[in-house]
Length: 237
Image (tube, rainbow, N blue to C red; front, side, top):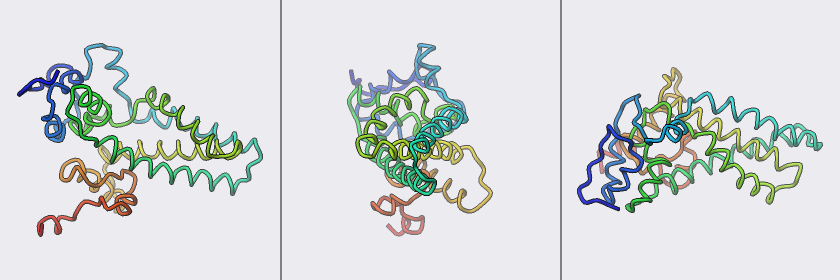
C-alpha cells in the first residue's frame, strides 16, 4: 500500500493518505506547517468531530474525576498528609510516563502503511500542524479508554485505600500536562519560568525534534541525557 514518490494532497482528508509515503513519511511529518487552521483528517463527519477537542474540555471533564478518586481514599480513612503525599507521588509518576510515552511511543519511527497511519493519528499530526488548536489536547473518548488499564495496574500495585488517591494524582498530572501543552503553543507567558518552558518545547518542534521530550519540565531529559544542545553548543558542533 506504500506508493513510490507519493505526494500528500493537503486539501483532502489526510489520515488515510500519509501511510502511502512509506519511508518518506519520517521526513514529511517533521516539516511543520504553521497555521492555526488544522487540516481535515477523515471524510467521515463523526470521526472528524472526535478528533477535535477544545482545551478547556480537559479540566472540565477530568477534574471532577480526580476529585472522585481522591475523595474515595478520604472515605476509606486516609489522613490528609498521607493523601497529599500520594497525590504528589501520582503527579511525579505521571511526569515520567509523560516523558516515556513522548520519547518511545510518540516518536517511534515507522515506514509501513498502517504504521505511518497510526503514528500520524497518535502524534505525527501534531508535529505536522503544531499550531492546530483543536488537536493539541488528547480527545476525552480516547483518554477514557486508556484510563481503564492504568486504573487496573494501580489497583494491583497499591492498597484499596491508597490506589484511588494515587490514581487521582496521576490523572491530575495528566490534566496539568495537557493544559500546559496547550498554553505552551498558544499562550503568551510574561514570566521567566513559563517563557523558558515555551521556548524549550517549541525548540523540540522547530529545531531539534529528537531531543527535549519533557513537556511540563525538562527533568527527565536531564536524567536520561536527551536535553537539546544550547545554540552555542550547536554552533560549535
